[in-house]
Amino acid sequence: MLATRCRDKTVATHVRTFLQYLFARGGTAANLALSLPKIAQRWDARLPRHLSPDGVEAVLASVRGNPKSGARDYAMLLLMARLGLRAFEVIAAQLGDIDWRAGELMVRGKGKLHDRVPITPEVGEALSRYLREGRGPAACRTLFVTHRAPYRPFKDGQIVNAILKEALRATGQKPVTPYVGSHLLRHSLATQLVNAGASLDEIGDVLRHRSRSSTMIYARLDIDGLRSIAMPWPVAGGVQ
Image (cartoon, rainbow, N blue to C red; front, side, top):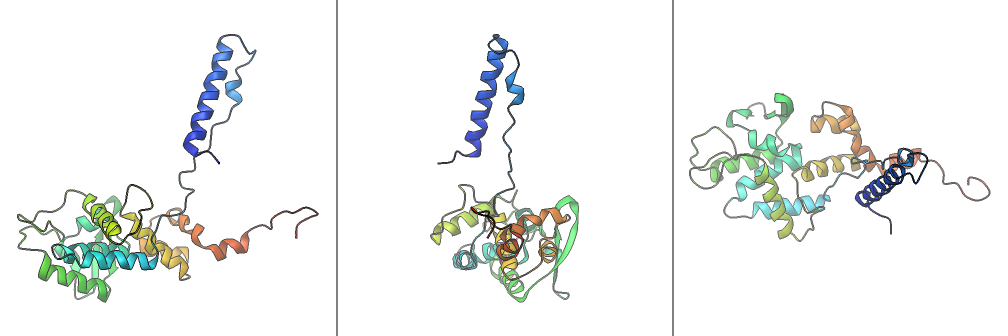
């Protein structure tokens, strides 16, 4: 069994400490610890954690069926599953950010930058249902508020993570990690776009990435594209 990165790092640290000890005690003529390289830590090497299309739909259906806060929770998750919004962008949305005539939503993104994204009929219907049935008589202008009086805005995006985690449990889907983050739906959207043949530039536009390097993580999901540039596996007697 291969050791994990964490264990690799621990072993290397112990060996380095031991070599330093030997040098300090005169056991070695040179400090051999300097020749021991550090273990590479590629935290971005893993594939984006995502749900299958059926898994996403199951989560949305489960949330929508909640009689207490289903209209609100469904609209929140749908913004992430269909438009790729981040949790804090959903929480920051205001009533005035919805332009019903133009069919657009202004997104308050990173770095205080604002973007306009199209509201699909599905998303528009979910927002309309929430405003009619699920928002309550809130006095503030924040779009999504608590479903109990005094109907206040949320402090942070942890509410989204909690909704998503409960939906995964209700649908029998095992979370990809103990911590369920809202980027799961954003990654799932990008994965669907990759599988549908979208280019990295198109995915970056949907996710509103400022740098193309942020979108490159999804290149690992393009199996056919990666297969076309993969080097042949060397075998005995030459490459075949």
